Image 1: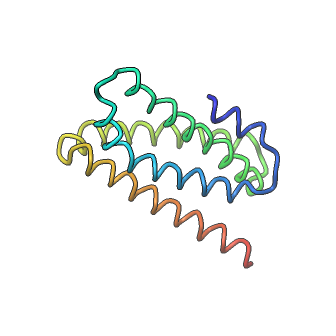
Image 2: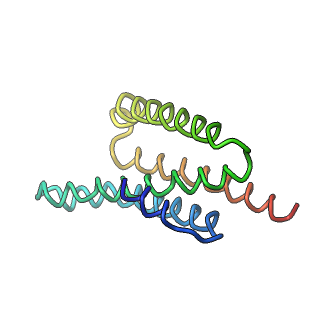
Image 3: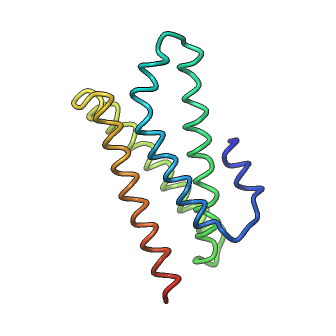
Length: 136
């Protein structure tokens, strides 16, 4: 909620750049998760510090992506419906794959690397889409 609130208040024309920066921060967060959790596992309070960071990064990404999409689609309801559906479907698929397949089969470190790799692939797609729009 905090990430969504902060990005909802933000009113500059650099949404695409900020979106890519937040995505890059998500990659760094995914890569820092295994060593960070191991380092902080002695204290449940320090361990819980990772959850707000993940929520902040995820919550900040969503409204920026929706705002950018509003420039492409004429109806706010269409954008809201598409993003809400994609958010729920992605959450379901991500939780199922991570909890049922990747963590048991790969472990924490390799799962975090896979998540970071998937995020990098998504960022590359976004960067190409944004770059293609500027050149056309």
